Length: 335
Image (cartoon, rainbow, N blue to C red; front, side):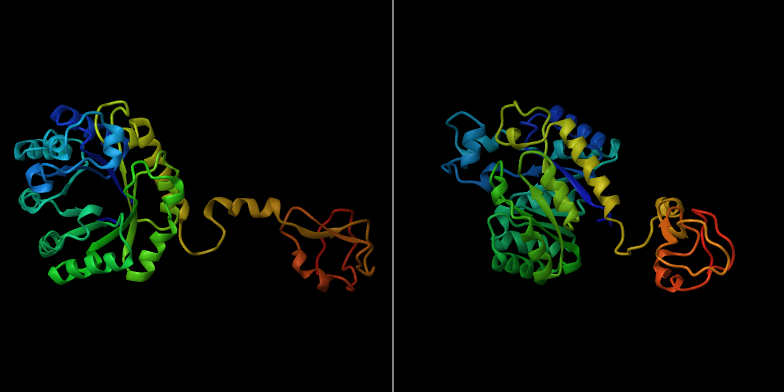
């Protein structure tokens, strides 16, 4: 991954099983300026039992009595669709990513040439899954929703032991509630992860709005992942917690602005403000008319703009000297 903030526009399953909707999502992500658009790769029968109930947020955001399996079966993307969407991403010059949710899907995405593998929060305790991704030796983005430091440590050890260099792993702080209440965001935990494990960190966001993403960048996030949709009113489990196209554009613009604003660690006058020094700093000047040889005192000296004369920081040196020549009121003195 590159050095700038890596912005992942998370399409997820917001394509609703339609290849045309998926393509429209790719176009929106590219036009917003995201670095990557990410989908989800799975086979429902490998991901969930046929009797598993929906998560609470899925029940809130999608009506119907179907099971997780039935819901997910409708949202699968087959191999041909993956290839078509990858080609479409190349056309729009945006990176195609997809999160695998089972071992077979890891193999598929690897065969398609993906260079970055995203581990979702739900798989952080899945040893066989982590080993398989770790063995690929590719860049890994590890989401940590629902987990504590010990579980993150375990997952990192598995990935590294399996063959992935630590430097290739970025750990995302995350919360899996859709939408995440502000009181549960806990952005400071992102820095805790960075300090504890000496890894690059980022934030996978499920809050409403974009302010938390921008704050995360200001706090050191190297990767931002955010769900988006064509329309929050579409039917599906994630649409209501996703950004609409204009919001995605605003988020990317905000992140890029903050990225520039962060600058370096050096405190010095910026290129744009050098021109202001002369006009807004001050010099020691004559408060009243002063004759040559007259003693310089607090009664006949003052400090006024512009700069360019004797600095006010030399005030104590000036007091008590004798005037080298005659000065008119407001004339800069000489020492």
